[in-house]
Image (cartoon, rainbow over all chains, first blue to last red; front, side, top):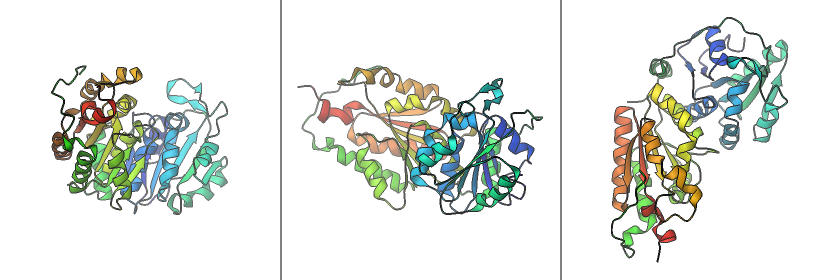
Length: 181
Length: 188
């Protein structure tokens, strides 16, 4: 729903369900899927946002992956790239490893963490109406956005995108016209 | 490598002034169109960090842990920007799993590493990571260059940038503790 009318938005996904969920919303040349390097999705998004200020960059990750790179929120708080939005799909569990309760599920409020790191536009989204209202934020400028989406802890069928990192990288770079020569 | 440098000590050489080879490294970043520099604050890199922060053409990103720098550089290259990471040898250990990002997606990655725990070190806590830094990088697929002399620092930085951006591989320059630390930790 968040990516339905995504246009030219560039999306970086965190390993696990976020990668499958973004693929399920429709494979796209402007998707950069991570299948590993846990904790790195938001820093990849940061590097991309800083390198290409003309792009709208959206990181979509899960609560577990975000927790592993929590310090990066402080790093992003310092730079505040205005073309970056971080979306955390928070079901409160480590879904990939057998549904163990995550720190988010145990009470860690990542919206509060993001705010404390200087991301003034950090909000928690719990309803479909709130989600609809948040869609324009993906293209907003001003300061980095942090959206914590509270989602159901179910397991829809997985859509698995390519695991070939070089292929995904080159496809993405071609799509955004990255100058790498 | 867990070896000590054994070359003759030349304490009076003026070109050992850290400022001169650090300036050389910064100039090498500039002449190679490096536009993004990620770092965790470090005494050995302090002059380069200060110059990067003052340079309007360079985006400097201070990191809470070196691991963040691997994603940062991957993302910068996705967008077509050339970047370099500055870290201390201990930071290499913080990056290990993130290095898989470079091996799997093959992007140019250059890390300049100030060494600790290998030469006239006063803090034993620096030794465990310092003594396996080069091996860790090699095991993680990096080509490693070691600078023991001031003149080597610039040449090897250039070589590391040439290799990384020419071949989309990971390279690192180890600035030896003998090069960095002589004035502070020299034994009388």
